[in-house]
Amino acid sequence: MLHLLLLSVGLLMAFPFFWMVATSLKTPDEVALFPPALLPAAPQWHNYPDAWTAAPFGRYFLNSVGMAGAVTFGVMGTALLAGYAFGRMEFPGRQALFVLYLATMMIPFEVVLIPNFLLINRLGWYNSYQALIVPWVSNVFSVFLLTQFFRSLPNDFFEAAQLDGCGHPRFLIAIAAPLARPALATAGLFAFLGSWNSLLWPLLVTNADLMRPIEVGLQSFLQQEGPRPHLLMAASTVAMLPIVGLFFLTQRTFIEGVAAGVKG
Image 1 (cartoon, rainbow, N blue to C red):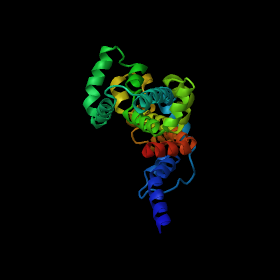
Image 2 (image 1 turned 90 degrees about the vertical axis):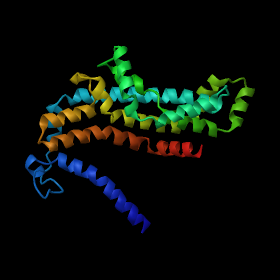
Image 3 (image 1 turned 180 degrees about the vertical axis):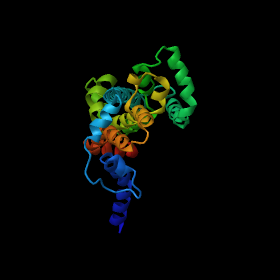
Image 4 (image 1 turned 45 degrees about the horizontal axis):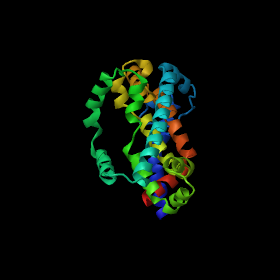
């Protein structure tokens, strides 16, 4: 019964994705049918190249890949350094600073939206890649995850390294960072997902069509195409593929990283 329940919930969760792919292969007349048909009578594979050429989706896609990739590596780097400092190094006010840092997770994004926008304007970064990338290269959750991981490491590792004359930088590079790969992969996956799906911030800090990522491109596609949801679903399917592929490639590492963070 438990397996049957889990299977039912899984199918329910997967149905919207199935409907998106099925709609992307339908004709406009099939999309307009009521009640709607579950499957297309004849798959319209040309909907995908049609959707790709209906708007500059090649540029949108490249913008998203560059933005999400840069944010991911930035988050992994800052999380590794800050997590090690909070988790393994002793300095005055460490715990108070860590609690204060975690408290910023309670601040809604909308509260800091306008201050961040004004700062970007003053820096002269409006309509630039810096505006899309720099504000998001540090992530509180990722730092927390890496901190918990480093705190869970046995002290014997560091003590043995100290006896061999290994300081904090060398210990981090040679020992701690390789052990933290599952946690780093988890932090990177969440960072990539958040950056790839970002809509409001890119919409606010860019106005040039060639600077915008794919999520904003989907919105402009909807406005331009109006009653052509089959093309919109085709574009949405293409936009979803990198996230699904990345998750399947890092699934085992992702689960190990989450388990390590929870355990820590």
